[in-house]
Amino acid sequence: MYTTELGKADSKAPVPLVQEDPELLAAFEARVAADDFIEPKDWMPDAYRKTLVRQISQHAHSEIVGMLPEGNWLTRAPSLRRKAVLLAKVQDEGGHGLYLYCAAETLGTSREDMIDALHSGKAKYSTIFNYPTLTWADIGAIGWLVDGAAIMNQVPLQRTSYGPYARAMVKVCKEESFHQRQGYEIMMAMANGTPEQKAMAQDALNRWWWPSLMMFGPPDANSPNSAQSFRWRIKRDSNDDLRQKFVDITVPQADYLGLTVPDPAVTWNEVKGGYDFGEVDWEEFYAVVRGEGPTAKERLKARREAWDNGAWVREAADAHEAKRRARLAA
Ligand code: FAQ
Image 1 (cartoon, helix red, strand yellow):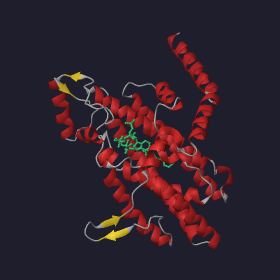
Image 2 (cartoon, rainbow, N blue to C red):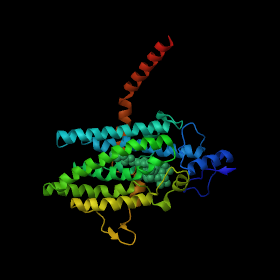
Image 3 (spheres, rainbow, N blue to C red):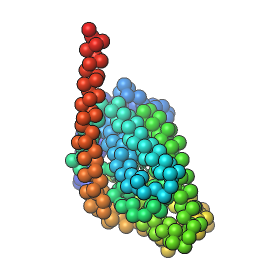
Image 4 (cartoon, rainbow, N blue to C red):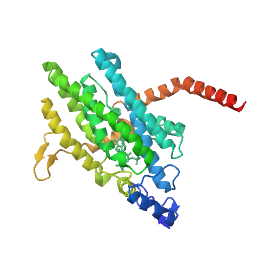
């Protein structure tokens, strides 16, 4: 029998979890290798289903928790136009979370279980949303850097092997690209504004640069899920390759703004045709993944309260649906 899931890197030896039928597995792998999309009713290995639920639900949680740092500035946006644009962006992130929860539900997991995993601290969400938004310039930096990193990671996911996830990514990427531009436009206004505004823009870049590089995940050598996810074409590019692409695109954008990325090691490397850059503080990354980020408690508290305060809406929707069904059955 063929083993399709290995234990995590922290376990000493690979642990076979489910023994799959070799013929079904071979047919599945051939379809994936031919770049076919796998659809919800198709046969799939248990480990494929599990890793998709893990990644998609984590992605959904990131979108929903990601509404909070920017939501913090909705009441204090500097003009009506800025407020309307930010409101639209934050609503888009909520929409992305919903498409992603729906995509994960097609794999047989329930919304309640996913939300419960987030609220109990079992499920991860992106480290980036555990940092505070201290000034209006942070809203520019999030759009420019965080949405910029999100696009870099999500464009290849439009060709991920699971159909519902890939299709959700198409719409998400279109919207993220508007988000990135609105962030860069805020940065342009501030970088070309008063000396105080330019200093705020530089300070925001200083605080968001390294956390943005962490969004791509651990270095390839320490990425336990990558090998299997590549084989099944869930992941199409490596964490380090995407991080490098992001640096290569973003450093000239910072130059254009007259700002400096907070890494003295950034230098153009003619031979590789990209920038060399310094080492991410991986201890900080793992601490934030463990739930020790600066705003981690605040974020989870806000999500739990939103869930509790929204209970009446869910109950009303259920009651409405029950009445509708009763009417249809009568
Ligand atoms: N934060 O073996 P790998 C957005 C975990 S959406 C927290 O490399 P994998 C939109 C990882 O889960 C941002 N945990 O894992 C927006 C794994 O733990 P597990 C979210 C992280 O899955 C913008 C362990 O470390 N985007 O920003 C992080 O192959 C503005 C080992 O890592 C997505 O979720 C991290 N940064 O690669 C919203 C994209 N990195 O689960 C509002 C889809 C790694 O084994 C405002 N996801 N971990 O216990 C992916 O592409 C992948 O899951 C990676 C990680 C690349 C994130």
